[in-house]
Length: 109
Image 1 (cartoon, rainbow, N blue to C red):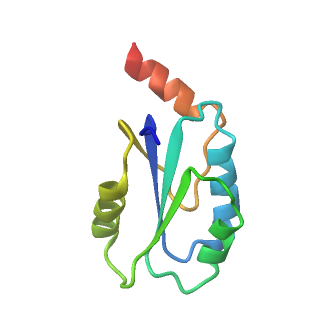
Image 2: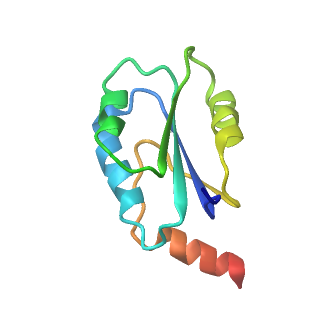
């Protein structure tokens, strides 16, 4: 499988109430050459169950066995990334559908 253009990093810690909207905003992107690194930092809520509802091979799920600070969790997620570019999406944030397309066009100009 070829490396994606963008690796989206989503670090999650007990984000169940927000994850559906955040994940839907990734899937609605007009630019679709991405992978999502979903890094679950030992959540104790239903975060893992929410991401399992999304059957998309571009979503790669990892779970930390320990609670670690966000910086270390981000570093671990970045280490799994295969894309040329990195993008970060917080568990309680959403993207407009053209976000990646617009950012990549700006980077190319």
